[in-house]
Image (cartoon, rainbow, N blue to C red; front, side, top):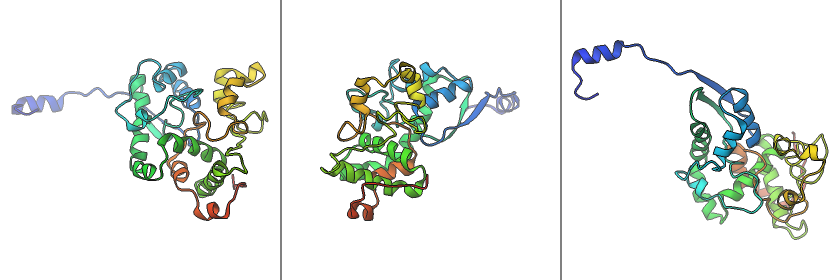
Length: 253
């Protein structure tokens, strides 16, 4: 500190410092909010419910320091406000930290990774919310960065076409109940968290906002937490595939 005398400086530097224990955890791209919360619990950091309550602002937590948080609309039927914004990466956490700081680690990284996209978003007349929702489907359907922009173009063509009734028609979020599909509503960690498989059916009010074969346009919320490649692809679809009018795809994934 400014003003310390020489002896105080020596005493301070020679004092034993207590080091806080940390843990490093990797969250793959495409993890759902529930899957992230479960991994936090598995590593002894916090409970699933406490993490989700904080991440969704349900416990009074405030993340209004971030523009993206303030821009998330209060969409009817949205399951989780945090879905799509918990940026997937490798993080080092203090094992004795607060739930708020754990959640803020994800949000701080999302803000840093997407901060330079706002100008393009505004120029294209879209919103961060729509970009993130579409990116979550691209992440799920493409599965690899090389395919992202092409899958994005197909989704853009469907959304903008009367022929496709402006529907995404993605099995990743639909009424289709195939165990082989990684379906957000049927057999994902989110579906298990809400207990839908055990009940034997997806609630109709959920399908009304998330079934991409039923609704036109984007669903009420994202279905995964996408990486930056998928987010960028949602904003910048492959121009050739747009121009050629592709509606369907088979990816290397």
